[in-house]
Length: 113
Image (cartoon, rainbow, N blue to C red; front, side):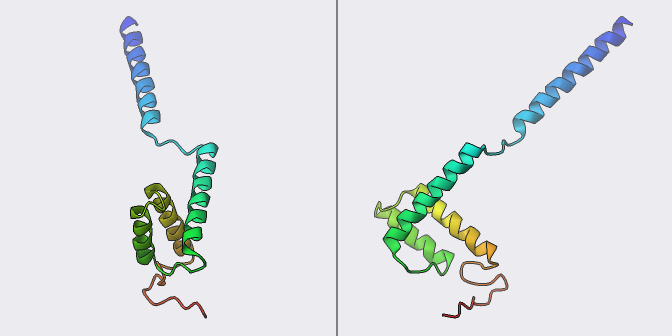
């Protein structure tokens, strides 16, 4: 009986340790505050970019990246702002089924303008 209880306690201890390790390795979901903070930072970065760019449209991601790199070098934007802007526009193109000004099938996007 004593041997059984010892083995049972070892199994229980190992399962608790394994559970604790599993919780540590799982990536934590962003909190609401972190999500709002990133949204605010993105909005501020987009506003700064639009103030620099004016009303011209973003037509493709390669040109946007080059433009943002130049703004970073000129210290008009930070690298963090440039990264947020690029992420924002990448998501916008993806949500419309485009790939930086081209449709996913590689054909030019028709804008009608």
